[in-house]
Image (cartoon, rainbow, N blue to C red):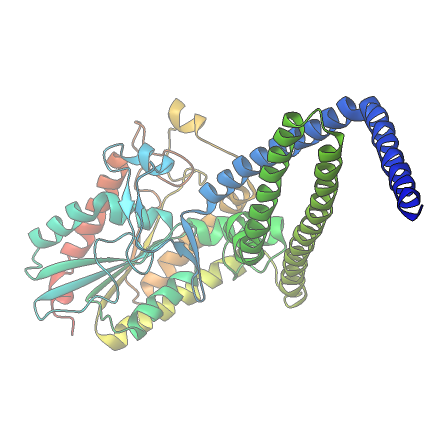
Length: 445
């Protein structure tokens, strides 16, 4: 009797279970196709989003792949890297010398710094921005050859300490860093002028920064995003990797869902797992949002500190020129104490109307308006006048602002950079200047 009662209860439970499965099956059939389609659609949307994000990240990485932060200089090229990709400006300057390598300090050089001086060495420092950096790359071997021809018989080592976007006092900082690191130059050539005025003016007008700071155009457009977001960006990359893993699991779930399309029980289990994964994905996205928000706060704090700490600065031409003048005088004073020869070379720019009388069609087509252009037009004449004053006070200055004035052919590839022909002319003018002072240069201690 008891057995039959238990059997009856078990039978009823089994029957109810079967009925439940049938009901679930009937109900699930109503939304099964819609549910699967919905899941697939969401997976594809996320997949496309991640692919898009990856491509965008690749572009960002490409922009920043050549840049590294430096505690004193602001930024440098990535150290110990061969830049195989063609430099677009350098390619316009000289298509045959459109790649270069950096050393351990991130400067264009075939040897590391600090260079260990040998008894027969003659060290030449090149300071400045991109025009000076390209000078070392494009004219380096030619310049060394010409130095030998005018009387430098020692083993000449060109120490390229120039980099793109540098303006005073960055050159001063680089120079002092090299000296403190143990390198003693025999000859120091500083090529500048454009960045100090053009980018300094842009700092105040466009970025509300003190012109004494490094170029806001370079700092905020490139370096600042890298410096403050890269730390969180690494974490975000890890989070995105986890998100990719979830994405792959979702795709595998979809395969199982289609494989077991006849089993609603399996589908229920898989959909439960899917819902759990969605919760995890939401947590990951929240973490990414927090990281991004954190980097934004750092950015905001940096902006605030720059603005609030310098409320009395101005963009007057005299202030811009004074930053350049004071930095140049300090370099000259250090060189004088060390017994090395220093020359300040002022560079041309076709934004300054006296640099070149006739601009070719190619030169005009390369022109781009910017706040730096207005700064040059307003203030470069004052810098040129100041060069003459510094010369009368005994500082070795070479004014090459008008070196291309009477040339009617293509010289400039943009407002400030010039082609190989221009660099040859520029280089030869420096050699001519040094040749008249060769005895003094050779007698440096």
